[in-house]
Image (tube, rainbow, N blue to C red; front, side, top):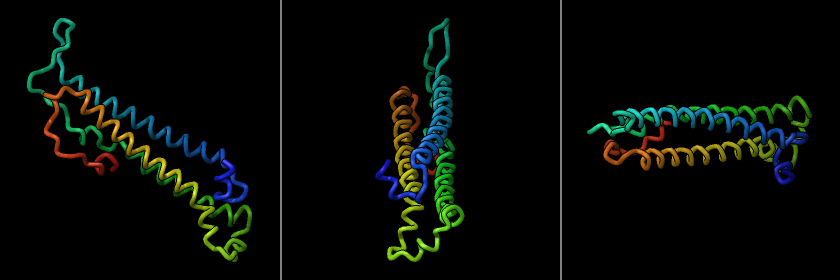
Length: 166
């Protein structure tokens, strides 16, 4: 925490801000993970029929492709990215409104220090969120390809990341 304090605007409660980023990221992960898992297991259950309490695989039935199952599941990533951008703007406004030190910061020999203070925490949070999103996509792809019976998988045409994010 003390190492991050030198990259944040003066007077910033680093702990509170990190909790903010973590909470928003957790909400994003929880909601969209739940959404993907619900749609995947619903599609998986449609591959089976029940005969006297026994689950039997329907002959020739195919599961939806992974791209349609992941469609829009990670749209919350953009909300997280926007919240990081908003926090960067809040940091700039803290220099203008709260501490009134914007003019001092601009006259320092290292004028880039203002940008370092305002952008470091949001960029680090966005980087962590991006890595977490990529790991989740990989984990969901592993679930899809390893849990679904091989004969029920459609022909794999590739993974379209943009359909999952947009």
